Length: 147
Image (cartoon, rainbow, N blue to C red; front, side):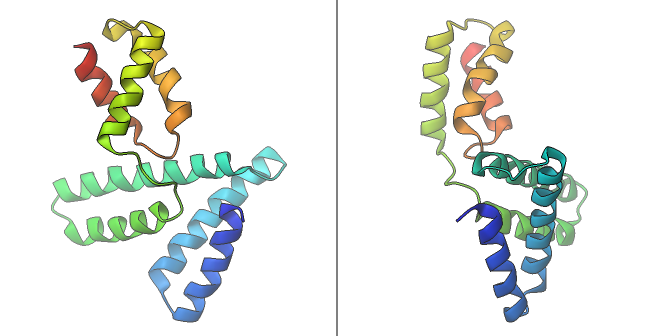
């Protein structure tokens, strides 16, 4: 079952349960996936759906940070609840140790030695962790290792 099909099924369940917040988030995600499929003029594969969900999760994390800094805990809470729904459709997130191992392997494979190699490292790492790790977290770990 594709992510889109799971979203459709869960949307029906949320309607029946009267869970308006979950329903709203699921509809938004379905719309984003549909828009991308229309732009592509073909159905999306699961990897492409994961990219869309990852981007949606990233936007929520950024919003949570901004709202929290501004003292708008009500809006940060709403974004957090949406993020929880989105993450339920994403693959299991990698732990910090797993990410560190992947970064170390990539540094060894590419021979990266300085911050000038950051782009090459990110290019090597991101396809393997897509949807399972936040790019910002990987970026920070690379910075620590190469500094």
